[in-house]
Amino acid sequence: MATLTATHASYLTALRHDFHRQPEISGEEQKTAARIVKELTSLGADRIWENLGGHGVAAEFVGLEDGPTVMIRCELDALPIIEESTLAYRSEIAGKAHLCGHDGHMCMVVGVALGLAKRPARGRVVLLFQPAEETGFGAQAVIDDARWPQLRPDYAFAYHNVPGRPLAEIGLREGSANCASRGMQIRFRGKSSHAAAPEDGVSPGAAMANIIQQIPGLCTGDVSDADFSLCTLTHVRLGEPTFGVAPGEGEMRLTLRCRTDSRMRELIQQLQAMLDDISDPLEISIEWHDIFLGAENNAEATDIARQAAKQLGLEPYDMDQPMRWSEDFGRFGLDGVKSTMIFLGAGESQPQLHNPDYDFPDTLIPVGAELLLESINQILG
Image (cartoon, rainbow, N blue to C red; front, side, top):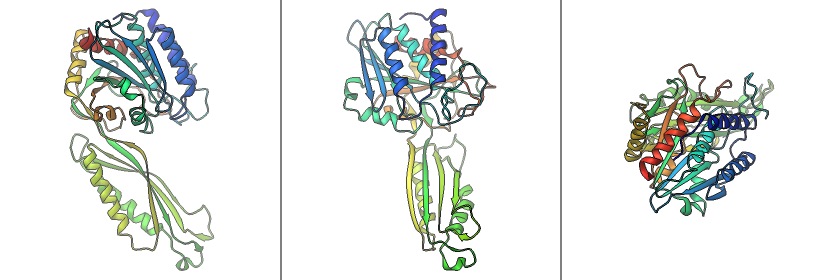
């Protein structure tokens, strides 16, 4: 496969800046997907699929002989966060920004398409630009698409950049790679009353306060422990902002995070037991959002990435614990694909993911693209 040049790197950097200016959040990635289709068409993809699981795009590059299928996956979506930046290419869309690095991830995979101008010796490569990763629904939506059997790979690789780690460091880990997480929305409904006669109503205030006090007891261990769990209170609302009404309804939002799916089931049971113990005559309902299963890295795929890094003269870092944050890429592994997520250091002073001043380092684009190309070469070369 072709090696990327300085001209390629300049082209990919300019492309990232274009994506950064025009972010689209989960489920709205139509213009981003159209630009990806335009780029892949100009780069000579053998076949392109559009509107996969929403606005997803996939491109096929066929090798010279039959062989395995290798999928390289990245994400299309941005975040509903205001960017705080003086960058010349800062977001032009109010309240939306690429503050997780998906703009950079896309450009690394476009870089792979550049390298595939020289086709692999055998098999085929599928480049997947997946929608709706931030909400946890995109990967499963792609798998549920009727066209997935045409794409389904033997191996799959993906990247995520990691602020706080040395720039361009390659992080690898077999087994548990990303935590399971989900958003829990709890609604309480009682009966409002005059603030002078609260006893004539049913306020959820005491029940909500009791749950908040119990939340710290649900947090166990460290992410290196199999029983790790974290329960984060992200929002509380009780009644309306007034002085004359004793509230009759309220809402809480929690983010549940566990290393394993089994521990997540236990944590959900613990929270349900708390709600069942509430003696006040309240109507309580639960809705689940942003459901991510735990992601596991396949040992064979991880070793392929390790050998690819060494072939390029890079010494990968063996991670001693999984990431706390979640990734729906793990869904492909559950579908029987030999998959691994590679973690790419974004710099020790880089602002954290989802910070309003985060920006993906452009210098990582050719590093990531070359490692993905060499991983493909390890299988199909």
